Length: 388
Image 1 (cartoon, rainbow, N blue to C red):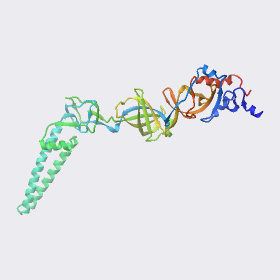
Image 2 (tube, helix red, strand yellow):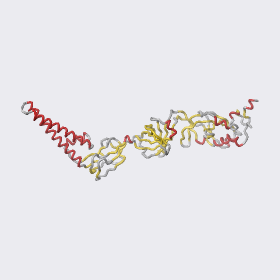
Image 3 (cartoon, one colour):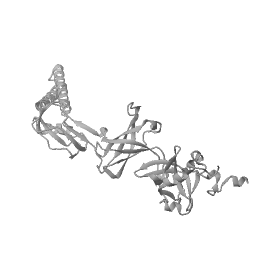
Image 4 (cartoon, rainbow, N blue to C red):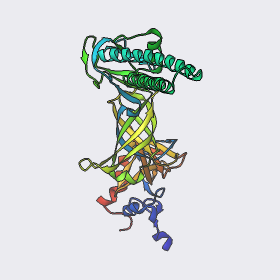
């Protein structure tokens, strides 16, 4: 009959579902679609060492794999340079020290600093004298004792003295002195050659090129200060993922040297070109690290999340078999019957791989010796099938 013709009597499944006799139909299956593979007996699968179990499900967002390297966050990093030449007199800080904004990193003995301080103090004295003279001439003018010309001369002298003092004060600021330091110079009449080199912001001293007694020139980098609470993650992404890359996407990074930790950040920059040699797109993520475990120079693996969380089954990689370019797992339906299930794969994690479509909770899949089931599926290619 027609019904009998549509049924595989050898394997006791509908002919259209018999994977052994109709292996070519498997390649056309949609994710979640399946065909049947029946073993010769109820004991055959167990004797072959085929083991099954229910996979665990987790929430997982689809992601792009990338290589990554940790770098200093150069937006929170500064080279500290002297703004004049001199001899290093003192270096109270060393590499690795946490420092506060404005903390002294080195003291420079500078003839230019001594001259600038001295000139400024002298200008303050001249300004004070000119001010007193101006006030006296103003009183005399009001009493009609002093002439208009004498008053105007005194006023001009006072304005020029103020301008000279202001200009010399700006000279001290240009040497790196703060308002508090300048006020202390005025109070203590300090014209010493000492010039403090201070930290521009709070952070960690990551590089030092200063030695007591060394002569340094203006602009010579003495220290590097960095805020280590964040780092840049330099990403190399395969070019075929370019259309999926977006700024502000979440990035998860892991490192072989830090096996128990995953670091999370966000994409802050994507290059406008592709490296012609590697066919990679460069990108950058900003990641936080309050523990300070990650170090610049570390290489690792990153995932750039490109969608929302969705359920994923975690299965051993050896559970997955490929046929005609598609991925399959075997779901046990009975002691001797397995379902060849088309699945969609996600990320790989060590010996496991995520299945993001094609499996449901509660299904038992082959986790050991799945190649034996695959061999059973393909055996018709070595002999006759039920349709012959």
